[in-house]
Image (cartoon, rainbow, N blue to C red; front, side):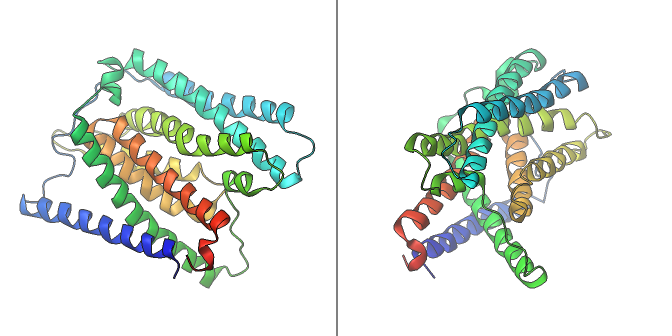
Length: 293
């Protein structure tokens, strides 16, 4: 095992301990619904507003594709060109979608952006929930990734998992430093912010209206968490080997959003999660940690 592998094991253990402590406290309190006491986030989201946010994703992708067609240097190799076009497309998509989601939330949520989850809360509380959520996400998603790799190795030995476009861009020798910087910023910042605004803030809030409600029940909230998590995972169809883990990440982020009512917490967890993946990849490629740490 390499040094990075040992760090991953440590992350799994810390996350498992945090999760075990949380479950033990929940059991001692009589096993109440895990969403008891969570904020309501009253809103007037309509199907039209939801479709408007979805349309912004499509429009952003089209705009990014045009930018990629115009801005990608012809001197790049075909894999690097496709990866760079994907980075530009994703960046434009997240920027446009985030802008539209914020505008919709400002108008549709009763308390505006604060009711949407962008209001300031206790810094200490948000930091604690963000770090705890990050460790739990690393633990659960890390285990799911390992199990998925095992299933692929046992059942589909001929399948070669594709690399993420951002990683292809970072490692391509003919890509400029500016391209690498934009790819890293897009994956570490643009994607987490844009995806949390849409999948948690808009889609999850709107999905709660689709499930039938019963007085005192929070099933509609769990339905919304599951639906947004599955949509979030399937959106990353370009790397199918990570879809199960990303669905689990979506459930964790969805729970944090429902429990805390804060998109700041989910964005922080998402940013930390993506940044760790980028850092690990960078260390493996440029410093040869795969060779033994």
